[in-house]
Image (cartoon, rainbow, N blue to C red):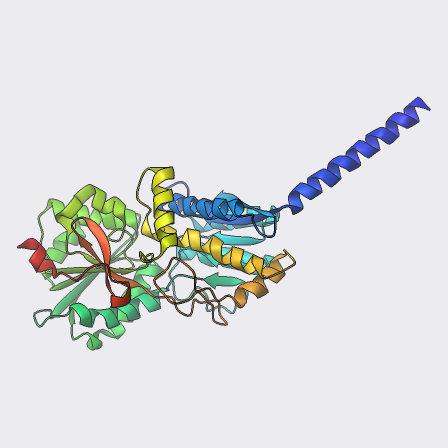
Length: 396
């Protein structure tokens, strides 16, 4: 009898634990984050995760999603396609309701494939390749502008800065789908700018030096230089130009990972005044933006890298979709995301909403210029923080 009683008590205890664990899991909604946390892109990947955690904490502090807390589950993509695939699978097996990521277009392509197979929504944080959402997938969504949008922005915004002495242009760009996609689009539409292409120099983002490439650029002596790449390689390019004292009349990046990043101006201060970049940015007119920048500074002791704004907004978009569904399952979240229309956000665009392919309908870059050692928006005018100053005037 005693043995029977002990057996019953053990069964009841086990059942109690199962109920308790199940209750804990259902009270938490897990969101997966696939970003490079080691390797050459760890700086950017960690910044995206940092802002995601700020968003998670903000939502939970306000009561979560109908009382359910959000949890960010992070997996390191290692900055490689294989690593991104492995990380996505690991997170899917942990029953995340959505995936986010992945900083590079090649990694995002793999994550989108894994998400589609598992029928789990994937909200892109940063990945610009225009081909990413052209595969007919139904579970992938992108808030940020793609390379085609950035390229169209360049064609449109160039009129704002163009002068009669701007006649020639040269490109220097990293050779993945990201860099080549931008160069190909602008090249096909270059007649709209009135510029003549005098050179197009590519390199691998993993290169250890750009010395020879900068020597070639100096020889080309273009009126306009368009650099395209990630933070590490473009910071290397800027260092080479600065150390050698090479002058270009106008430098305007397109989705440049360094020119729009405060980390670069922390190094050079006002030495880069006049540099331009067409890139994503936060809306400095927004009170929420000011709170985000302040919180990032407080937590991490540095200015928030500009790309990280999409980490924050990816969580906010998922949270908005969760609030509009009663069943917290990936399929329901996917349907809710597809009908997203958010006007209260931190981006310099009217709304966040998606077309039938998952692309952000209103996504767009802004024209940023370094002035007095700080990045500021100069165009479009409704988001401008300062007047545009030609690069030559900064050198006088």
